[in-house]
Amino acid sequence: MLELDLQRATDAAAPSDAQFRQWCELALRQRTADSEMTIRLVDETEGRELNHTWRHKDYATNVLSFPAEVPDEFLDIPLLGDLVICVSVVEREAAEQGKALEAHWAHLVIHGCLHLLGYDHIDDEEAEEMEALERTLLAELGHPDPYADDETD
Image 1 (cartoon, rainbow, N blue to C red):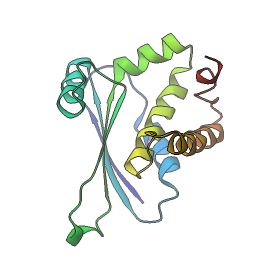
Image 2: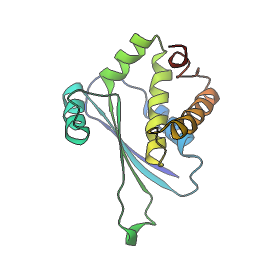
Image 3: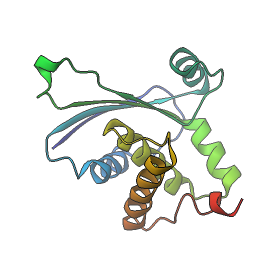
Image 4: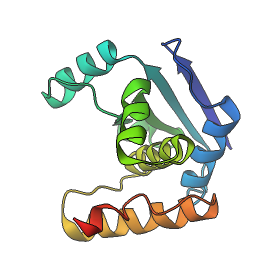
């Protein structure tokens, strides 16, 4: 079971609670244990501050993933971590990339959830595995391959 804390720290329009839950549950379905996570929707100011603090990048990014660092004696708690999503960056990227806004939202939530599960895209092999899973999950939702345009460059 998923316990999702959805924090809307901006008045900007965003998907419904039900959509966020659907996307998270899809991404986390390989996990058999209960899961607890937070998604915080932010404006560019907060997004930029967090990206600067944690990644030393002075701009707002689309999604930041903060996997829970749980001490060994508490490893059986279901806390996965937090996602911080900058609403205006998501909207801007979807428009610039010619992607449907809902599909882009779904992709970024799934992408962030996979990071919380330990997936990464630092090296090519890990990136291919993570992207293949994202493609499969998004296809189940009826959304196109989010990386299709990347491969034609």
